[in-house]
Length: 303
Image (cartoon, rainbow, N blue to C red; front, side, top):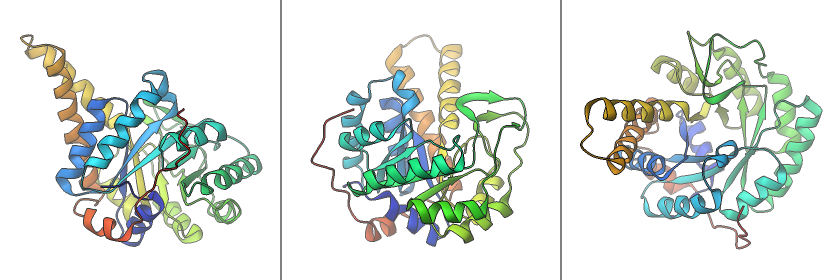
């Protein structure tokens, strides 16, 4: 099954009031676990390749495996270059096969964020690639913990978001309404009213970063108030870590292949849980019928 355009996938989610899960992939066991979960519940899915993680695996080696695995499943898949550092890196990711890009300029002042995002949109749209912008600052790092609600979190303004979307031409927008990257001790304070206002003012699919660690009720409220894509990574790494610890605390008979299989199964179970909470289960056939198949750029030069 070919990849599909992420912009089409997210429009379907937005119009039908569910969210697509986007999952950080750092290894083959994560890749297999995520895709197996999507197949199991017949859900569209996004594979996130996060630039900061390229220090831990070779992107040029991983990307062909991602594209091959995505082409073999029967559910719609998009491959997103996530939290990129520059236009040049985003273009390299596109040439390697990503059909969506997100360059993180959210820490810049509004005018600089707008200008740089507009440049990225012009480049990516020349390849017919989806662009995710970000407005407002979501602090933290994937896989790390915060003791309390961070003081440097900057909420997204609905008025600024409307102007940002109009002037940049982004296809979807990541917004800040109280989540953080990584895990936070205590209960996150999410501004659902702000999210609904952002949905009504921008009229494009909205994205939530820092989706791990929320309650089931919080996920459902995010979807009800306009989230069309929710990013997950820490939830998967936590599941993998638990699997490894449980294996070595109870079973020393086997070796590394069994550890990897356990990680894959743990990632699959956690991904399945997230997809079902977001309401994406059972949506694959609808999405495939309404999304354009993705035709990879012929100018593939690697990363």
